Each structure stands twice: as C-alpha cells, then as structure tokens.
Length: 299
Image 1 (cartoon, helix red, strand yellow):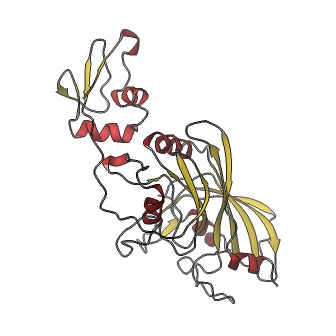
Image 2 (spheres, helix red, strand yellow):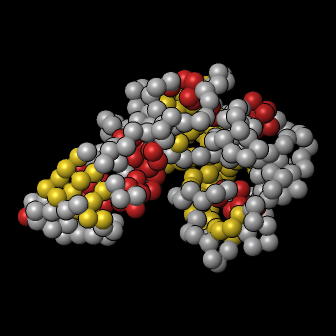
Image 3 (cartoon, helix red, strand yellow):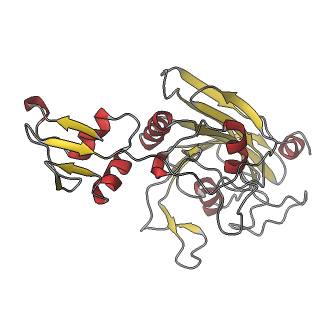
C-alpha cells in the first residue's frame, strides 16, 4: 500500500495526473482502472478519475502484482536489431502475427519475445506480458519495438501518442505514381460495408500519410512512406484510396500480381525515437525482405 499526503502547492490537480507524476511505472490509463476498481481512495473514500486533490488529502494506492500470463513462450527464430535492459527491437517477418488472438493462439511475435526476454517483461494492464507499444499487420514486415518494463512502455507509448516517433516504410504499389511526393490527409474509420476492413470515411479519425517516389517501373512504383498518425491499415487504405494499392494486398485490392505475392508488399524500414530511459536519440533499421529486394532490383 502506498500513501500520499497532498501539499498546498499540489492542490487542484486531477488525481490521475498527480499519481502518474508520482509513479513512473503507472500510466494514467492504469491509474484510471485502479480508481474504478476502488484500489485508489482519497481519505478512505472512493472517487472518480476527475477528482481534484486538495491540501491534506490522504491518497491510498493498493499496489497490484501482475498476474502470470496464460501465453506461452516459444523458441521462434527472430532477427534482433537492438536489445538492452529496457527495450528490444526485432525485424518482424512477413506472415507473423504480433499478438495471439482468435485463429492465431500461438506462433506470434509475443510468444517469440517471451522466450527471448524471459523474466524481463512489462506488466502494463495488470498482466505480465511483453510491452507491445505499436503493431504491424500480419503481412507487413519490419522493425518493431517491445518494452521490457513498465517505465519504458509508458514512455514509448507517450512518444507515439505525441507523434514524436518517426516511422518510415517502403511500399511497392501497383501503377505508375505521377507525383514525386505528396501528402494524403483523409480520415480513416471502420468500413460500414465490411466491418473487418478500414476505409476513408467522414466519421473516421484524422490520418496523415506522406510519400515520395524512390523508383518507377513500367507498371509499379517503389515508395518511401512516413506516417504522422497510426490508424489501423493506414498506409494500405490511403494508397488504395488514391489508386495505388500495395502489390499483393488482397484486402484493399484484388491482390493479383505477376510475382504471385500473397499479402501486401509493405515493410517498416526504420523507427526514430528517444530511448525511453536514457533519452538518447535512436534510429533502428530493418533490412528489406528478399522478395522486395528482388522486385526493386528487377524489371
């Protein structure tokens, strides 16, 4: 049990913000959950997350130990790009799902990371698990960072939320892109026609994608893509919307292509961010998969 007594100069702060500033291992979302579960009280009374603390308030925080996860570690080979005590970055292969779900109970990136990290895992959300702070679609390859502890997880999540992480992708798209570079600013939300798909829709959330042409071929184009926002399927939806779907993307185009590629030709090339603990500027890069190299060097 942790206790905090509010000082005069700390008055009128929201309790979730106040506690987040005092506990680096707790995110505001976790604090809000603990308040709902009445594991955080003020003067021994239940409160709401919007409660503003007052001088001499006594806050009690019932600490919880992360539960053991039901997920299992699996020795699956992964290309490790970078690793230290706080984070690990890998080059996720095409075809690998990030997190177990219905239809993919194991064989995922999380199962593989658990075998590598062993006891060094984040406990965000009340369960011991690798700190997945961002995701890649199953058939999108490339660099992905995993937090090994809660402090790193919270910091990286904040950097992503505040658009402080630069994400660069390489996409091979169908058709000849005319512009040398352009920005796509179209809101993305769940498709009303097919709930399994995303779509450009007025009811969607802001989504901004920048691209520039790296190489042109007779019937396809190689693009470097940067995203400001991280909407589900953002790059794939935006490029398909302007008439240049990723080669192999069977969800947002026919998927037919002369190379017989299944799944979008999209690779997360690099991530630029500040190390969540040291603050050092970092740029991590993942080498292109062989099939993309062959297409880019072909024709």
